[in-house]
Length: 232
Image: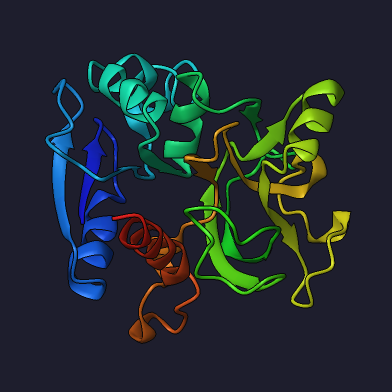
């Protein structure tokens, strides 16, 4: 399958994603500059981490207005798979493709460390290669990862099972002390109503091969490939 990796001014995890997709998984990948208007036949679109436009205004706010985002929105509306990682998650929210907002971490500090996340469901295109209830160890690196939504929206998303990844301890226990940034309901990743767009703050591309000491992240990418293969 072919991945399209959108490159914004300030993206810095685009090459990491491409390495995982092509060198670890053996799939095709193409960079797509944010001023383009065509996804060039991509089967899955990745919005990588970084600091698009230097995080001016709000993180992801300017990138959400880039020309390529019209194509991303159209692709998502037709059921295409889209994954936003860290800054990509912020861009998807600013573009209206995912609900809620990502605010400054509650300790007002940039956080860069490994965290544990509980896989809430395995019937999505992004987690189908995980085991039920599995705990993944994946690094985070962000200043604005504090997920916020009003109570009505949280209730609706929980009812629709949109909260896919939650911060937890190594045993899978979700509690405030294991929540690194103050996110409501310990949200680390969520999908849209249709389930084909995922935003997640942890960086799976940074822990996808053994020489990095951790391969938990590859399960996110393997899920996308498996899901697509099963439907062809």
